Amino acid sequence: DTEVTQTPKHLVMGMTNKKSLKCEQHMGHRAMYWYKQKAKKPPELMFVYSYEKLSINESVPSRFSPECPNSSLLNLHLHALQPEDSALYLCASSQGQIGPGYGYTFGSGTRLTVV
Amino acid sequence: LAKTTQPISMDSYEGQEVNITCSHNNIATNDYITWYQQFPSQGPRFIIQGYKTKVTNEVASLFIPADRKSSTLSLPRVSLSDTAVYYCLVGSGNTPLVFGKGTRLSVIA
Image 1: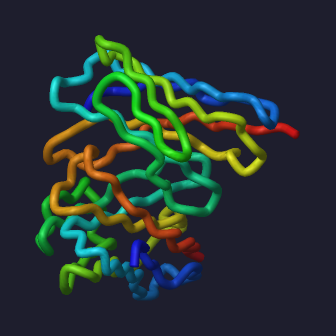
Image 2 (image 1 turned 60 degrees about the horizontal axis):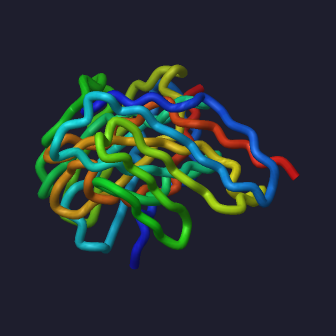
Image 3 (image 1 turned 45 degrees about the vertical axis):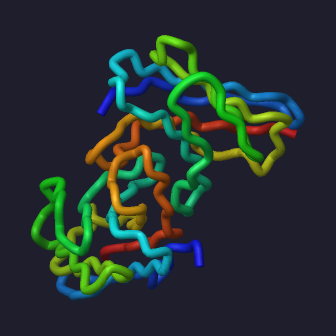
């Protein structure tokens, strides 16, 4: 298995809802990432997990809460989002190191719309 | 991470070779150069990575001059399906991927 699987593919949520995005990989990768991408913009790094521990939080608002229950699974819990949070949320993984020298595998993303 | 500069956009006809150059003047000794491709509404896909000279795989070639202050991604005989955004990234060690603006390649029939 050489894929990163993200669910759901599309999500519409109200500003008072609580929802979660899920990311799964079975490549034995020990680093996992969340990126946010707005239309016609590059992906922006949000969080980095290394060996199931949060190692980087790029000053993301607390309404986004990441969780790494095990080495194969990464969640992003969403609560009280704003319409400007609507974007494509991408998950990625890489082997043990998190540097750019190690090829990242990205999922196809979750298209989130906040209404 | 070293700052990278790429052309914002490029156009090419089908069947032509496309060369996208990336400038990274402050590249560090341990830095690798990595290129990703992204189609609309999909995650970026790793294309190629190199440290110096030339690297070739089944998809592309990467040319890196001796001073490593720039690199050129070469796509041979592009087709319409190569229309995408191409990102050049430079870095190493414990710093994660940080994307620049990328180059939007449009292939025309």
